[in-house]
Image (tube, rainbow over all chains, first blue to last red; front, side):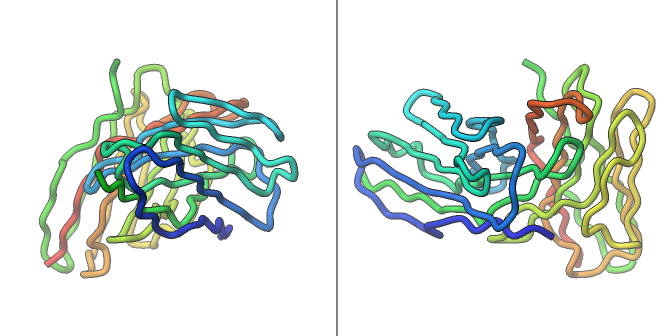
Length: 111
Length: 115
């Protein structure tokens, strides 16, 4: 299967700080999705990206579809305690194909 | 808004038993994906269905089978359960897998424990 490398693996930050994480692959992707998952729950869709270079925001979250189509970035500004969780990227190679998940970034926000 | 419904929420089985997981997609969604997630792991794709036909297949063991019914709900059938099958099983639904701008929406999952 496809390998989506997500970094960093974990982050410990102070409340109010900004967060950046990224997802990279050796393959060109058609779609990038970003999810947040709480323990024992299903992933919740945060942002969807469909075009190279696309920059999309959802509140304090901003994500970008890399120009090379091999990567994507997620930024969280002014972090708050409820941002705690595991963030996953998911990429789709082409229409009708499965979505491959990244290895996840565990975020801890220290009040 | 209606979400993806999965049942049961928790399931405990013995080795070599069978299990059936059910998934009810968001209304009007025609595509269902099944994922398996082990502890501390990312979700691994098992199988997907579009308009009641299998559309893609991932790392689904031969002991597992799945189908999508006429009302678009899906069932994952698992036989000869092994200890290693213990995991969270997620169903996700989307609209128009054959088109563009697809978004996957996940259910809360079924936690399967094999003893």
